[in-house]
Length: 271
Ligand code: C2E
Ligand code: CA
Ligand code: CA
Image (cartoon, rainbow, N blue to C red; front, side, top):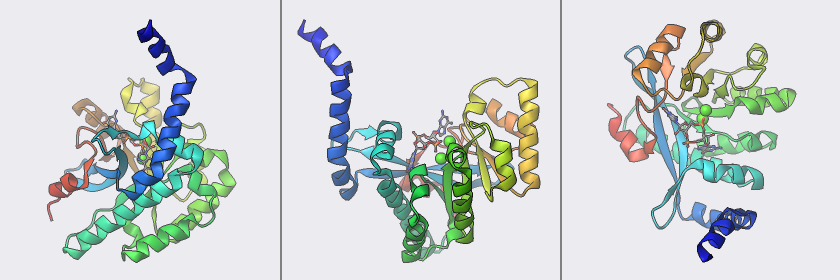
């Protein structure tokens, strides 16, 4: 009886709000004490180019060693606003890394950081990014901002303005999860993005011929507009062959490397 009660208890709403409170109580402490770890996942060029950059993905490593994935805390941080602090922390860690590459005479890779939609309504977030990059002497061309496509759909006018300001400052702008929204194509018409990232959903199901034709043409169109196209979630040789078929020459996924601690990524660098 005690057992079954505890099962009900664990699944109940009380338990999830209890856990939320626990996370909220711990988050500031965790940020101060370095529990949020930045992992890097390589982005590769398929024409034998090897690594061309990386994406920073955060993990929460608790004091007891448990590593918690972003889906367990990011939605909550987006709700309570803490995500903006966390994103700035990740951005700063990335700037520090790029500075260390430059200091040791290496050619830095551009690194992408995820920027939550929550920032986009804060007028001074770009100044903050610029200030952090400046503190480490990192040129904005090494810093890529990944913003999810759906953020562009909510309030197109306002977001277009933000996109222009991002470009003015020289950051690389990337539209994440491309293809999951409905107005992807009309967005391309107006939006000054450098890169679109095809969502991993595309590669996790079998596409029919019409779908393949559409994707191949979107990629072609993007290239004509001087927009680079990268695909995420590439896991197998079959996925890779499909990319070649549709004309996508940049990829990210387990096939090339899982997100790994910064040190492991740096070990892969050749110069
Ligand atoms: P995302 O930006 O779409 O990142 C891609 C996710 O796909 C990552 O999950 C990555 O580990 C995973 N992935 C990479 N290669 C493969 C593959 O070959 N197959 C499959 N099935 N998955 C692959 P992760 O690290 O768990 O992050 C989940 C989401 O959390 C991210 O999705 C992003 O939206 C968010 N996130 C992660 N770090 C940050 C951050 O620092 N700030 C913000 N705002 N969001 C973050
Ligand atoms: Ca991303
Ligand atoms: Ca994505």
